[in-house]
Amino acid sequence: MDLPICDICAKTGVLCSVCETKLQRGQISELDVEVSKALYGIGVEGIGFERAIDTKNFVIILTKKEDIGKIIGKNGDNLRLLSRKLGKKVRVIGTENMRDTIYDFVAPAQITAINTVYMPDGNIIRRIKINKKDKKKLRMDIKEIERLISSLSNDRVEISFE
Ligand SMILES: [Zn+2]
Image (tube, rainbow, N blue to C red; front, side, top):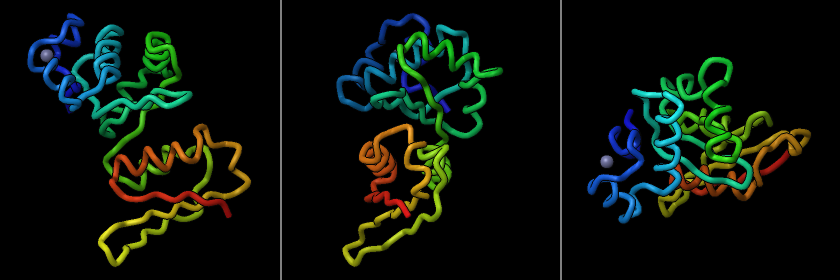
């Protein structure tokens, strides 16, 4: 997996015409650029991520499973350095498997069920049920979690408590 910008841009901090065009077209975001540079800056090379998302309390880095550990670093060292550079707590979430991704977004709250509802019009709704005792454990706003998961999967997401 590659970085959203090329290695040279991550290293120099100046965007080449290819990366600049991607940014202008909205294929990558300013935050993707910031995170790429920050990763390079702390010496994490040869890894990549899909995209970075800014939430109220966190910067979330979405990546393939094999890169999660490398981004986090030994004892979470890289994560701490990244947080300092980006000025926000950082979480790394894998994107291979939608189910795992959903669990990661909601953790440490426990999911009791995920039901996939196929609508007659072809749309898909994912109903995520969370133990109501875990409501306080959610690290993001429910609406925000719904929005983020649905932006990754293109499905509608509804979270409820039981
Ligand atoms: Zn570039």
